[in-house]
Image (tube, rainbow, N blue to C red; front, top):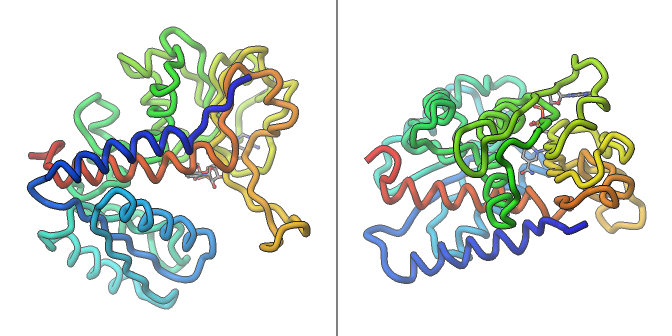
Length: 290
Ligand code: NAD
């Protein structure tokens, strides 16, 4: 079993991005992030995005707003960033407080600045194989597979979870023509009959469910490649924070059966941030939309 080391791959890609910035670009790439409310996990994610920008020499702006911010106020802020010529791309960190409609906010973002790749224009273009900002987490997964030269053509891939930001887009990307892709993909979810039997057929498993250690060792075929997208906080009194992070895969029982597996933490999470940086550079160079 070999670990798919998200830290190593993200450091390699970040070094390439930093070298490109150092060699001189027409404009320093600029990522802005909006964070509404005090969700602790969101705070950690946004901070890591801002820190990563600094590491590669990008400009970044963090805009924090209280949980009571109204939808109209947030939409106004989105419009300001849409029309700010210095901002190449921006994200609105999810989840948003319950009184704000995620969908309306996503639709309000100019798709040419949508470096999270959540806007339906980017999603639709991705599905048709056109140039697009790919959603950051699936993009990160694709880059990790590419780095390790994992064979994908003709492989049975079972994706568990059908969210718009992970499960559905990664199922599209892995079934697309080309590398990494050309998989025969099965997209499974909470209504799937006999999920363990589906997972057992997989050469490649992508788990994006949000239930700690859900996928067990006896569900996984010998030699499978397992991509664990889950990031779950579970209580751990031995930690200063009072919790530890675990994936959607029961690492202890699954890892011995795998050819490759992503750890949590240190796997897909770091790649998500790195993919966001790649998209920001593409946005600043007008690579997708001219
Ligand atoms: P989501 O809640 O939007 O979707 C979960 C999916 O899992 C749903 O499609 C649902 O049908 C499926 N599901 C739920 N219970 C199931 C069951 N019993 N059997 C089969 N399928 C079931 O979640 P999401 O936003 O896709 O996130 C999934 C996980 O990935 C979470 O742990 C989240 O924290 C993590 N995540 C990590 C990153 C990263 O950067 N690594 C990014 C996004 C999400």
